[in-house]
Image 1 (tube, each protein chain N blue to C red):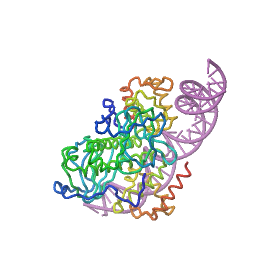
Image 2 (tube, rainbow over the protein chains, first blue to last red):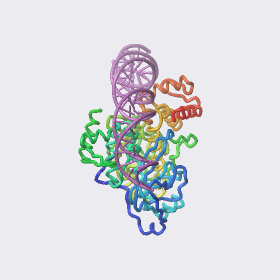
Image 3 (cartoon, rainbow over the protein chains, first blue to last red):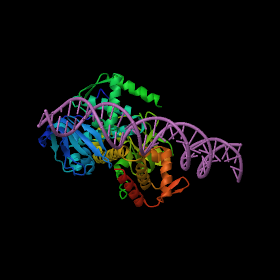
Image 4 (tube, chains in turn orange, brown, blue, green):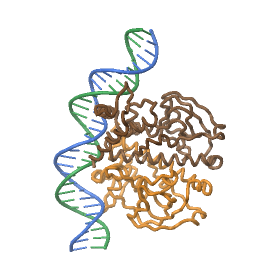
Length: 219
Length: 219
DNA sequence: CGATAGATTGAGAGTTTTCAACCGATGTGG
DNA sequence: CCACATCGGTTGAAAACTCTCAATCTATCG
């Protein structure tokens, strides 16, 4: 995974006035689904405030946290652009204020909002890169390295959100119990500190170095 | 993974005359790299004839076959659009005739070739879906199911190409030896037939059903 | 305070990999 | 055209990682 701690939210963008005009506000509570797998998109969402996760479901019941959308992120754009049905479910991880833009088709974007289309294409490109790098990690890294990187990534992006073991595991392809075990080890080694259910990373840089050293031993 | 046998090549598209005008032809031989990870893109490629694979490298040396580009596919578009360096290496899997379009920036696409940008955005969306579905498969399916689906997918898309065990494994996250073992089993069960190094799928539909039944036993 | 969701811990199981040896096909240079 | 090198494929045994299952504990919230 690309860990760019400096650039926390590369896909965040401000809305122009012409988009604000056609926005429909939608408020969702924590745990509420914004849309569900197999529904047909009728537009694109934008997060004014809050946090939304995109959850995929494997046939055996395994859930995957594919992407996390934070403030000033668009989401729901992939399915809209391809004209697919949604391939995953968008769930509010925190109470959120959303904007919905009811577009009719990608042709409308191309004609009336070319800047938006360009932005979304770039977002898709970055999301694709991240998906492929995470795929690589799943085949080529130990679970401890994946958990460390997921922890740092998620905490770095959304420090205010209290990530659960389950979510960390769903993001990096690990079971809840495995995340627990790794976190316990990391606490013993002095890299993190548990604060109730929350996790404090004491030194992200040295934790990353620790992870890299583990990887070197493995090749 | 989305197995849509009917629609073999959803991202294939014909070149318009205005694009042909600015095309630079490039011939590559089997095994030759078109571009390599970390290089900076200076345009976009299109396959007139042949086959190109996008290969990612995990830190432990594991290679991943992320995507396969066939005739009338664009490739190299992701990095160009995001303005990244390439995150993976494009290698010709067969002798290929390529077109290279030396664009300066995505702004140029937006202004002069909006239809192309729209097409590429849709391609990115489908590629992202596929990447995320493959990620799901890796966490939620047995290796035998992944190998069966990879085999059918790759053979269906490019029947003329003789996929190696290594490439099948790199596509679905399995080791060469594991692919061999599974293929041996599938041959014993009568679903496939080995022909030298090549593999013939005798009945794709019944093989898929076999795979699905295995999955049901597992949940 | 009780209920519920999340977290922890342990023991055991199982899938897939690793390592190593060997075989077979393909292609090249003498 | 053969000998040989090389690449890809096969097979087996053993190891290793991670998961599964089950029991227990702890936050958190109504």
